[in-house]
Structure formats: structure tokens, C-alpha cells
Amino acid sequence: MDYIKAFIIGGMICALGQILMDFTPLAPAHVLVLFVTLGAVLSGLGLYQPLVDFAGAGATVPLPGFGHTLVKGVIEEVNKSGLLGILTGGLKSAAAGITAAVVFGYLMALIFNPRPK
Image 1: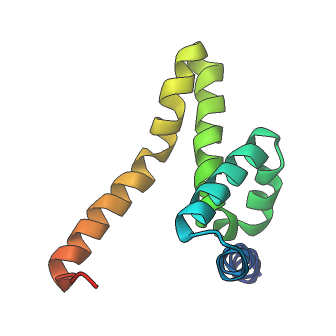
Image 2 (image 1 turned 90 degrees about the vertical axis):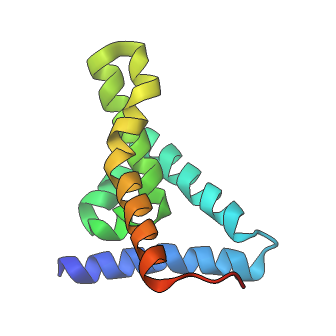
């Protein structure tokens, strides 16, 4: 059942992004920023964590999950280290995901030889 919930919630988030790109003048970059910001705001208000608890990876893997991770890390680090946590919390919480994206993106570029369009 966890897989079904993750698939449905993640699919709904992705479908919403596709609808925004198809039926509004928003470019993919605008949708990216909107989703990350929306995840951060909802997380700051305490509204995104219940969705994460319900859908698991379906809510943490799409772009709003990145905003949620940043805000969650900042809140934890501020509680632990004070105001310095505003600068360090988001970086600490998202470092593993960003590093993995860079490393695996680089490896795929080496293996598959990307070409410009």
C-alpha cells in the first residue's frame, strides 16, 4: 500500500507541474522554483510533514520535497545551534541529495556521451 500512496501523491505533484507548463505561460524553470518554494513554505507552516508521513517518497522525491528538506534542516539546526543554523541547516540537510545528483549526473554523462540539441 505504501508504493501505491507514493505513486499517487508523486504522480499528482508531477501532473500538476505538467498542467502548469501546458496551460500557463510558466516555463519549466518557473515551475521548479514555484514547487521548491511551495514545499518550503508548506514545511515552514507544518503542513508538508503530514503529506510526507502519508506518502513517503511520493512527497519527498519531487521538487516540493527538496524545499521541505531545506526548511526542516534549517529548523533543526536553529534549535540546535542558534541563528547560525539559518545558514548551515539547509546545506547540511540537503548535502547528500545534491552530492548524489552531481556525482550520478557526471557518471551518466561519461557513460552516455551527451549531445547538444
